[in-house]
Length: 156
Ligand code: HEC
Image (cartoon, rainbow, N blue to C red; front, side):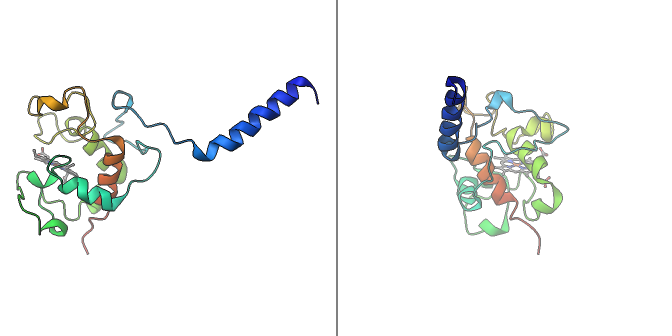
């Protein structure tokens, strides 16, 4: 084997070893492209966890979606708001790429003057607390988890 070939096969061997452990790159907030109201690809490169998403959804320090949205599945939880539409059957009304865009940036995906926060955007708007300045309200993983939960909300 020539030196060059040996080096190549060494590199190939290293790739083969590291590949299964390498986690997909997370799409950073500034790099997210909303295309026609849609974000087709997962922010984390993989599907979210609906059970964790349900928790993030209800957690007042995280999604706090219940502050504005009603939802039968979580009707045992206090502090239901009715500012936003009920999210029952939301998965029938929107496709996954649309729901992802709504969570990431409601101002682009829904309307410029919606009171719904943008959960994966560095500039969250005047209504968002200062502590989120320069940070996103939810992590990429939490967005994908909430999305996975929303996808379970279908009307029977
Ligand atoms: C401060 C209130 C508020 C919070 C908090 C909020 N939303 Fe909203 N959301 C709204 C409003 C209001 C609308 C309707 C669009 C409009 O009129 O601005 C909406 C619309 C939506 C829609 C589109 C619903 C449809 O059927 O058209 C989805 C999906 C949604 N919200 C999901 C969420 C999720 C998930 C969370 C938590 C991570 C959340 N929202 C947090 C106010 C809120």
